[in-house]
Image 1 (cartoon, rainbow, N blue to C red):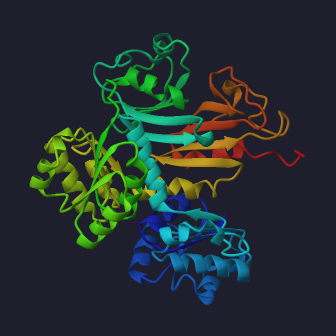
Image 2 (cartoon, helix red, strand yellow):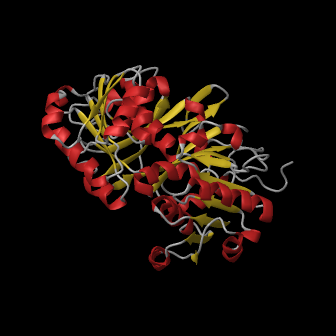
Image 3 (tube, rainbow, N blue to C red):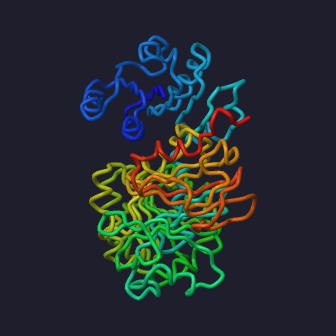
Amino acid sequence: MKILILGAGQVGSTVAHNLANEANDITVVDTRPDILRALQDRLDLRTIVGFASHPDVLISAGARDADMIIAVTNSDETNMIACQVAYTLFHTPTKIARVRGIEYLEYRALFTPESLPIDVLISPEEVVTNYIQRLIEHPGALQVLDFADGRVSLVAVRAYHGGPLVGKELKHLATHMPGVQTRVAAIFRREKPIFPEGHTVVEVDDEVFFIAARRNIRAVTSELRRLDKPYRRLMIAGGGNIGKRLAQNLGPHFSVKLIERNPARAKELAETLDHVVVLMGDAADKELLIEENIEGTDVYVAVTDDDEANILSAMLAKRLGARTVMSLINRPSYVELVQSGVIDIAISPQQVTIGALLTHVRRGDVVAVHSLRRGAAEAIEAVAHGDRKTSKVVGRRVEEIKLPKGCTIGALVRGDEVIIAHRDTVVQSEDHVILFLTDKKRVNEVERLFQVSVTFL
């Protein structure tokens, strides 16, 4: 595909890295030549210096015959205008824009073909907020990703000593939980993927990805680690867009405290947030945390706009007794540094957001994409179409499908029914197929599996 990426910030660079490695024709537009040079040194792509919404800049970037424009500059207005220009002047088929301002997002009628012709609206704060909420709803999980409108989930947990299945072969999972359908999609051991088979033994500290219906997540988690008690007391550091959204959504259901250092912002939050205790102060203030009973806090979530502040305050909260600490971290190098250390969960906004973008780039009828393991792996929800003659998956048992190395089919969703995939499970037309791919470089092979041949009518 010929894709224009407008904006070379953290999200734009992450998108460029993902798409350039998949043999797409990528052009990146930004006003900062030094950033573009650094990007071009690392990746096989074109760069154009200029304002992303200017028609002449877009023409220079190749907008006349582009398949897609992804507008992810730091300005909502620039992103929206760029999509309007692309629609009016170039009839670009797919236009994706990042819009962060709640003031815009509250009026969805703005984003229609008759108004602002944006095909896909991405709100990183909304995506990240939902991601954190799912982690809070499922104590002990490292990731919780939904497919088929939430009917089935992919969950990552770290295997702990004492878990009933730890030290045993995977084939024993069914006998441990009769009546509970689940499938282990992948295991990462010391950062390396292991293809799960019946005789595979789960070891302590393995990162285990399993697929299950939402109602069975807690039961499967209990097989791999001591089951954590549900969270009740939360503390949020940072009253920006993400912190405010989290407090709004979680306040009615949990005991929530929010720390904001800016006096004017703290006053505004205190006036608008119901069921939330708003504290004005520094989240890295040891005395404040102790005074606010940090040792009795179930989850401490640092979501300020400063990576260093998030990391240090989360580490301090953990040392003072917080049960689980999460930190929002923009720099990829920092995420790798702190993950699995003192901080329980490092959240990368780029990796959380990239899946929403990749969903619209994938060929075939792909409904959802989630980026995993800092972009090295992917979970994909694809819809099977056609029949046995025109499709490489429909009418075939799972063991007959020629999956690329490192790819597993974890589940099928057929209407409202969740079917955990086994070797003899037959894929039917219109099934939603949930796949786990440990080697993202093979994603093109998965896409081709779900493309219907030209004879299909």
